[in-house]
Length: 193
Image 1 (cartoon, helix red, strand yellow):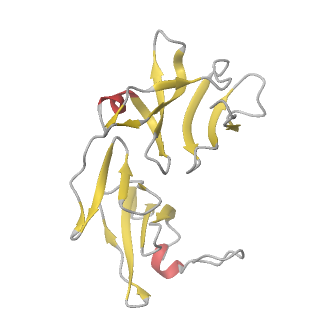
Image 2 (cartoon, rainbow, N blue to C red; image 1 turned 30 degrees about the horizontal axis):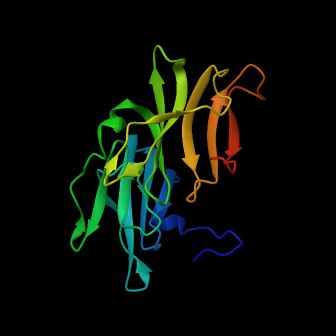
């Protein structure tokens, strides 16, 4: 597991030509999904490597793009779909429900399975973006609920990152009273929710 002092992750594996773009580990630190671009990769290319027999194996190209994982590593969230870990790998992609069709981009899922998504919707002051959530109730996801955390003054809202316990939410937006083109914001959940 990582310690407090950063160490370079083997560049011969991830970025042999300096083409590493970004990546994420599974919670058990046994798989690393990453991207490369530029050079021979005219378009962004997606890869996975696995830690087996006390060493990192060879990377292989994958169609899985920008995955996120549940805390236990048994669910992979990819865009508007998710996959569940099986004995033989990952299930086929599944939809969590109708609410996900509102998502423009940026999904984040708390440890209890609540989805946080960015929505652009005309007619409800969300055309510049808003953050919504959908909770799992009796085995089904409820319609999404718009969060109002002072984002109605924004010229642009994007992305959201919910903490595993939903005690805080981070997102980015552009506002006239901001600090630059796009700034990061955080909101802490109050006792009344």
